[in-house]
Image (cartoon, rainbow, N blue to C red; front, side, top):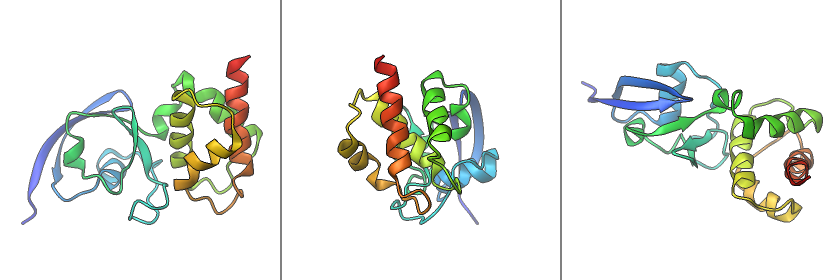
Length: 158
């Protein structure tokens, strides 16, 4: 018999009260119980960054976080960026710079990029590369992603 617990959390502004197996990770919970499939699961070891999302304003690897650990928290997934004015210009620059190709890494890459920008960091290519180094991308070679992040920061400064 699988032990469950009831959790209450807010995902992209919507409150959810759900019974969840205590050993279910947050990524699987969001994808299967809530039906938001934008959070991708890659390595399931916290290495690739595909499952990165915001938990109470901080990026986390949702494959390493149990859903029960998120009880009482506020979560933002890629689906929540659609209405986030702070993310809209970054998303536009990802499109303009062709910083997304297959799209698998994009949700986690956007979360890491938003975090970097919101921390007030500069449009320094080396610092950007260091910050997103925990997110793997096999398609773009990273240059377009770094361009999109730096362009967003520079546009915000003008």
